[in-house]
Image (tube, rainbow over all chains, first blue to last red):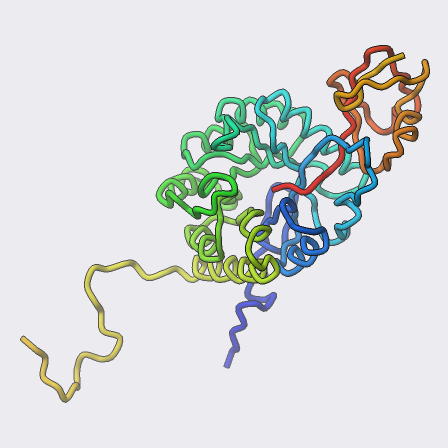
Length: 283
Length: 66
């Protein structure tokens, strides 16, 4: 008899391919908002991820004595994915992407050739500016980047970003850090249909809004290739435990997607044989 | 002469290079990237790039983010 161990490598050997990058885990985890670097490092390890996002910020030149995140990360273990978070124009996003690439080149990290592009519309919603995101995508693709685009769940915007050369389109489940989960699964479904039309391996990743493990599972069951999250782990009461939950959520959702769920029906279907009962059926 | 580093005015000697400035700032060069007047200056050019009056520099590093 074959034993089934959902956590075994054999079950989950289908790796996540994003452009030239092959990831063992379908969970990409952010490094922001942890109470300490130690907790961050432990949570990242528990999540099973091998790809983590980082942000580019001004170096503290006064009182620069604090530890740098780069000292707290195992560089051999993780591919870094630099983001352009905090940018509100295409110009700034392109600058930040280039600065991030320069740092990663110096670190000899494989993530030097890609970027998580975020061009935001305003500070209240942190929703993407669709036009500036498209413009920045075009420029970064021309500059040789593999661009992973944070976008809304708008299928038309998703299509345009792919056409502009985005390596992956990453629709938000709900606003960044909101923990509302997948607010519009129908839009994610349409995004998947459009982006994977005649291109089934095109990577689509839900980025943002995930609050708990079931959100991750729901996203994966829809057929997305991976989930990127940060706050859901970092701000959980017990981040380490939540990291384990997210890992399990990814695996459950992926397996369920691959297995193919039963269709939903309005009425019941008996699981036990209907013939041979000793009890008469009610009329 | 005066330059601006991360938005803050700073007085440096003439002909200071980026590499010399980074040493003066005591930053770990491997952890940072430098922009001068909105243009990235690759690490390989830090030792040869002399700063000029009123240059505006960004010295950035990586931090936690999602």
